[in-house]
Image 1 (cartoon, rainbow, N blue to C red):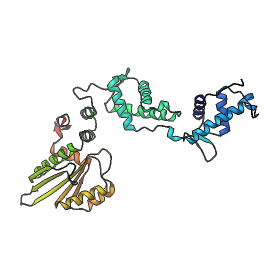
Image 2 (image 1 turned 135 degrees about the horizontal axis):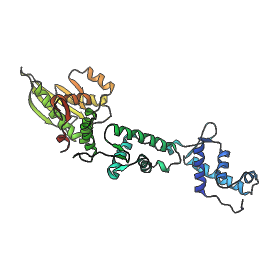
Image 3 (image 1 turned 60 degrees about the vertical axis):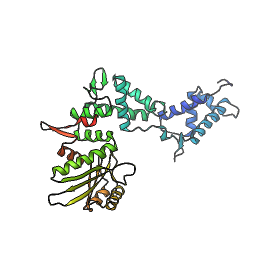
Image 4 (image 1 turned 180 degrees about the vertical axis):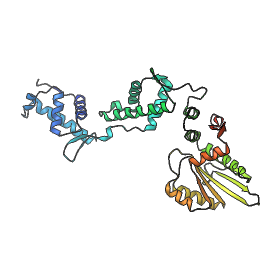
Length: 343
């Protein structure tokens, strides 16, 4: 070994990360020696333990880099006094984000092989820049699962040439177009309808819910005296009002609250606040409608409150089918009213 031998900090770090690809935990001394061997030191070089030797100085240099990585949170010391690679160096990616990326990628690239999609996903999410292989492996597994799922759901087409989006036959090349296409081609209609409503936003749901419930009451032989959307920045927790009268002349003031959500539950607190607003406005009944679901404690509160009902996503779809609003029956088969969502 030459006396003027110099170690490069970047090369040492690369050697450290390479070590953790071989095994998860290292004693400090073992890790230092591994890095030196990776950088050209022989077993005879490492035997020289004199204070002024090149190997002693190199060990000190590598040890300093390891200490800095520990202080920066890149490495940690286990209970067994071994060094490990910090878990936060691995990138955790949500399935829904991966699915959106794949669809957007194929919109721009038209057709790609599975390996091409994997490589682009690693670049996009940054797993190719981390020292750990586990996040690359997890991303590839997730992307493979999503590709198979999208093919089953007919959102993607798989051919010998690779994966591609189908010809949307007039559907917009957007997320909305994807859900409408899926509904028309064997997808879960209820889910597609709810996702389409989610994409239209909160104001759309306020308007649609009030009009839907107005039609429902008319179909139930109620006279609708007033139907109004009241949602806005200062709605006081109320999104709509419907006044009805039955055949005997009994009148009711029905107040409505809506929550346009995909997967977040409506809480007891939200239901209680709406009930408080309903009572303050002297409403005779209240309807809390959401495209998602109610927390179990919220359901308990609704069950013991006679003048308040909750409509979750499943019930919402049932009412839409019953009223044929947003979903229409065509030769015994329900279909989404696409004109409502493509405006």
